[in-house]
Amino acid sequence: IDAVREFFERNNANIHRGIYPLAEKATAKIEEVRGKVAKFINASDVSEIVFTHGTTEALNLLASSYGSQFSQKKGVLLTEMEHHSNLIPWQHYAELRNSPVEFLTVGGDGVLDGRIIDSDGNEAFNTMNMYSVISFAHVSNVLGAITTPKSLFEKNQKIDTKAAVIVDAAQSVPHMPVDVKSLQADYITFSGHKMLSPAGVGILWGKQNLLNKVEPLLYGSQMIVDVSLGSAVFQKPPYLFESGTLPLEGIVGLGAAIDYLSDIGMDKIREHEIRLISYAIERLKKVDGITIYGPLDPSLRSGVISFNLRGIHPHDIAQVLGSKNICVRAGHHCAMPLHKKLGIPASVRISFGIYNDEEDIEAVIEGLQSVSDLFH
Image 1 (cartoon, rainbow, N blue to C red):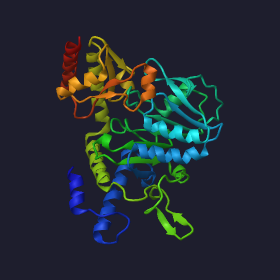
Image 2: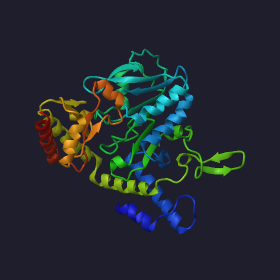
Image 3: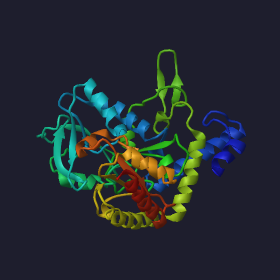
Image 4: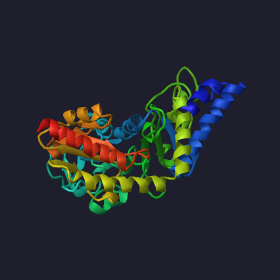
């Protein structure tokens, strides 16, 4: 908040345009944050960091470019537990080109089991060259399950490793150390608002040689080297993808958030989270009528736990807890196919952050007892 206010009061100008001191100062502030992001995820160069308006825009950018390469024989491989932002764009471009969209299935333990199905739920028997893109969540926003490219490829040997590997890291970057050099991904995407920054800002990281081949999603100002009435010459990444005016105050806020998280240490944040997950699961398992979704091993999940209570609608649970100032989500969490797979219309989700402790979990347990007393 202080960083955003300072930007508006002292540095408020558009970037990469004016040559007056205030504009140059604003430009320097934004480029400083680009460097902070690169360091935070261990990118090789600042040119690999693209500012977007969120994970959704970053995924749409990639889908619009790679979707143009789809064919009737070559499409995309996703998982059953994807957020709609990592499903709908791929569905759209696959439909335009009549391309296959297939899915790695989730087992009963809440982790991928290595099977591949088509959109009708039939077992898929593809060759090694069926996919232009493999795109999946690093952490499921419902199950909390952690999936890495390495674990994904180990589970299924027939996956084409020549495909572009895209990791939706919206639920992982704020909660654990993420090193793009060791992750074995070609691209990762994440959002600032999940890591304590203002909303409306996100990041696309991509390998430099691959970003140079990606087509922009938006065309207009700022991405230009030269324009005539008949043609245009564009800048190279990252500026190729940053047409128009960026959410400057959000980017500055993201920089402050990165400083804050880095000062604590992502290793310490992950340790704190594992301790809370372990505590929460043990306490929740004792609640009568509860079903917990996702892996029960804290080392296999990140900071969300979704659950249901037998005979009580998730919205009722969330409303009662909300009346006690306990903030939980209830619904399909933008992951309707996963909820259909689980055979439920909705679930309740508690989410952990660095600001939570065991007392918060005890408040949830006490609140759930009030829910049971009210509805039974």
